[in-house]
Length: 115
Image (cartoon, rainbow, N blue to C red; front, side, top):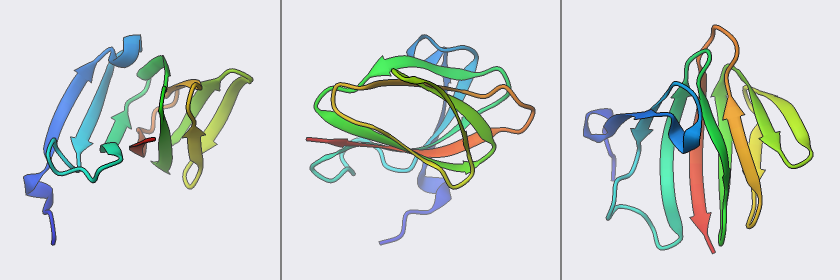
């Protein structure tokens, strides 16, 4: 099966998880297309000054695979710089946030797998 780009939904989310600015999301899969343990499979784009606010994951793990740009991920042990090729893993009971403070867009794949 092939799902073409024209079949994917693009949405703009204001102040996602009480973050700043807007997140541009491409929903690679929509409701009804997910496998049993997948809850989210998106490409996310954050422009300069935009963020996804601090949020917790319960009974699931979220993965951010950085495609381009540079960002700051906030976790319980502090802020960390992430760049192209890095993988952020936020497991059950953990919290994280991500922000972009540079001119280049921060683009990443976001996947949530439930337990």
